[in-house]
Length: 124
Length: 233
Image 1: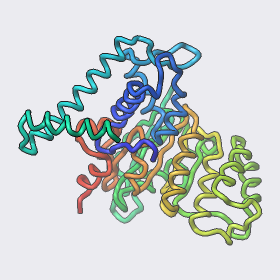
Image 2: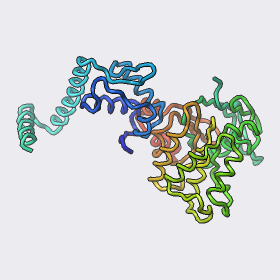
Image 3: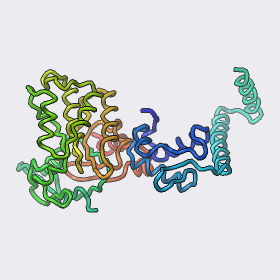
Image 4: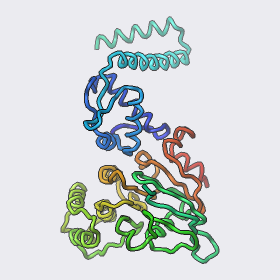
């Protein structure tokens, strides 16, 4: 399975996450055309109706828009994309901080470790 | 549009005092992939045979696209039985011609393409094929029809995981948006991502009829997990 979906969580939510991630990361550029529902459904190995639902939800949030005959496109609203990226980063940070606190680390220790890790990453 | 399949107060008894199905009410919309799940002996195959006019209801009735099961409904229902009915001395190519003669909606080219992708030779005799290969051939025949309702009884039971992926992919790519697929299986985790909806049968009764994403949302668990809980022995 190419998309690695978790059977315990509604599939359409995971598809939305995945497409949002692809947009934030730049795999899809603003104004790009999305593949058809059928193509995406086959790629993800999910039911086309589920894919349709995920795309409709993304459309409601304004992240993609459809043009009646020519398909679905990624929004060109840069402000929305920045907000989405910030929101997503905030969520990852909250998860990270919680895990660190669960290890019994204090805030200054977390900061020190993070700085060190970033330095290492920069060298590689 | 009217539902593709409706059952009203459907019951079947084989005359041993036990109800194989009892008072089943069901309506299936078009354009869905539906899993028919239940433990052994819960009535799945009985329901499937009733839909295909291989059994007659004891009580209640079935409507397929508004008609009672019979010659007319067989034109729009493509059925994969749980057991093979293929003549072992035939070649795969003979089977294609046979299906083409029988069913006006059979797409020869689609069948050939799928068989080629699965590495099955047209001139091979069915008796020389492995059990898994025979199952694939039969499923290819069934999915090569442009039917309105596909009834697949255990379509992926005997095939290896790689072919299983190909078959699920085949189902996803080949069924048209207005067609409905009803499939029974025990391999729930393999197929649950392609389902819209599941039906749980228990002792001949419908105990659950729900969209799969609703189950995940409300129960916070997979269909496979839910099945194991509901039918814990």
